Image (cartoon, rainbow over the protein chains, first blue to last red):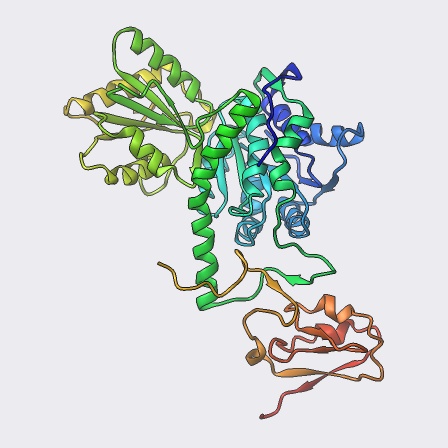
Length: 401
Length: 92
């Protein structure tokens, strides 16, 4: 059990998402950081390198020749027992895909920041969730952030989750490139000793590591029964991570005074008839529209999905029980479905409810476009039609259709 | 309900002692390493280089556990004392 931490703030600074993430990482004291600069994540790397140059962080820095070797270096260091970090975006994530699968399959608690960006083609150095959504079946835990403060705090919670002996999974901290990576916000910085105390339970936790005294091998060559067993245990750990995320979030809130609801954040959903679901930076615009509509007496609410993997199925189902309609605003495309990934997965989860709830899907913010309040209003109007049982279009690409 | 797990580890890890807990790859072998124990200086280079971790410490020299050795020949190639000779597997 962690020592009791009393919520306090060391100082308040104006940081962008990258800088907030770098500060969060600094507090976690990584042993090895392996990064290749890639827009929009580059300032995060620069900040970490500066910390080491200034002598405030004692970490091995790997200036990898490519993302694949960067993550591979982190895999080696993590297998040797180190706390490791990798940051990337878009094409960089695509390039490290092979090592991405190795990291999770070997159950190595690596934390990776993804400042999300459209993976080309079409080329365009622009924001969307397409990169991390595309690797959601890679076996990592994926946490999606909404603000710079949440990036910093999630970084700390990510190591607590990843290194938990019951979990041992790598974690993605995903945040919208540009909208979050470059937007400056008010950020409360925690005390280093408080973060040390928060991470203390996993700092001493035992996990298999490569060392000379007790030689081990990883990944071992296995097939059939043993292969299936390791896959099963990997999948089971993902399921365990859901409750762990809730527990860690609650403990974080008690220690630092800021909580994010764990797997999902519910906003004015308790008595709502219509609920909009989304993740990432566009949550703010939707929250504004919910407030405006609430002022007009409409019973609307919002769910921010914080966990994409594992998918917070049980929490979603319990939050959506009895609702009249659910809308999903995706900043990604799930090819073959014409919709976004969260639309498809929420529809699957809602099968658990006895009553059928109409679900409308919306694709917005592709190619770095703004998800404006007008677009959210349109989404609510269509979802309202669905709630009333009137004819409507199931999936709409906002601003295009 | 799952049957009893085979591995003591959560992921594809294996302890190298007493013997490596892994899939026996000896069937793949068409050459086997023969260690000249007089030439072996017990330096352990083969131990680190073996991709399947089949090299065993025999006290004064290193030798391959033939249940796991798949006959790749990395040990023979890397041995600084030229103590390992790869010979063809023939019949039993």
